[in-house]
Image 1 (cartoon, helix red, strand yellow):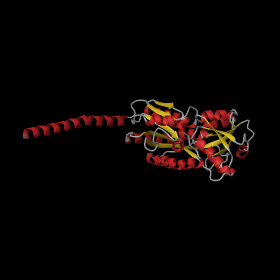
Image 2: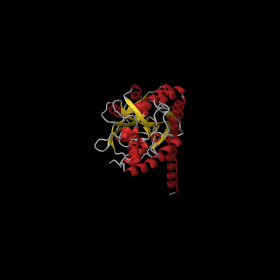
Image 3: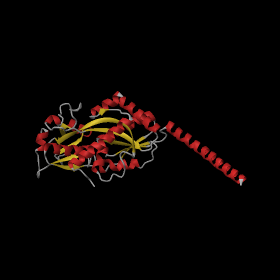
Image 4: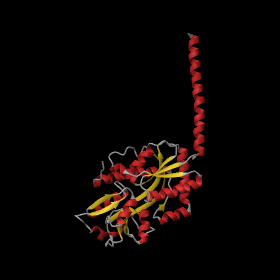
Length: 331
């Protein structure tokens, strides 16, 4: 009996030793992989179509990452459902740092708008860095007679004014709902799959009014195809200093500024999150990059990962209350 018990104890000890030996190389391999990151192409998923502000920013960051890493960064557009399709794809991806998500504030709006996201925005992602802020701009086409926001809101057809946004549940959609709430004007929402298509249809006169990011509207404004009427930030934008804010036009308590940032799937190693935060923060300190972003209407920014996480979570709660108040809900 004693011999049998000793045999069992020895067998258990041997099994434990084998398990430790098998585990240690895996730990070393993981450490080596993290240390050498990235060793293969990195996929940066954008939740909107090409041509919009988020896409332009992602491609600028992707180019700069490639230069520093000497590793390809593939910008992949996965539009739809105000960014939920692309976000769900990244949430389900391996948490190894090779699939990242470029998002804007719509990421925080969506939980209060959509009944089913297919992911948990607070639990399924690791926030990396907030890289920029940007307001939206209210625009009309060059042939639209409205010269200011008040005139544009008076152009009612069938009792309401149609406005184009970058999609259901986007900050631009919410900006329109807020405008209707604050002014009492009936606004008919015309959602697009991204700011790019919305800008094009407002410029051509298909929709009388548009609420889009400054970056997506900039080239159209410069060419005269669009006329800016007001920006949604508290103060005028540095790139459109002559354009009043909505509040300056007389609409009280109106503000909706938009952040842009990068996320990774939950469970991504902290070392990779830290490395990504550091390299992206370094990019945002580059004066040439800052100049490019400012010309597009962005205010360059760089945050710690924990700071960005607080911004996202606070906005999710804040926007949920707002969408509930205005009755904004999508199946």
